[in-house]
Image (cartoon, rainbow, N blue to C red; front, side, top):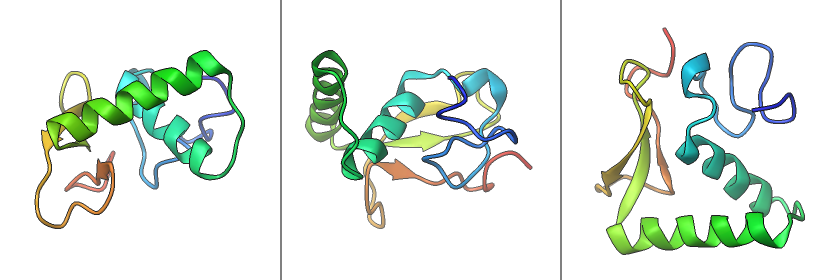
Length: 98
């Protein structure tokens, strides 16, 4: 990700917790950022918007949320939605990078 999407401390601007450097380019992390930007009225190219729409549809069809585990290989995974999942993302149980 470029400087538009990250803070200097490794935090994705759209997530309130730190993300390991090796996870910054993961598809689900990027889509969460695009989703947040879209919700704030940021205009995007049609190709980007379409990819976001397809990702949102994938989450809906799978009844899933994005979960983040800093200790896993990919970091971000799709996880079945549980009671208490309010949006598209489930915060890490550890709060991100310790």
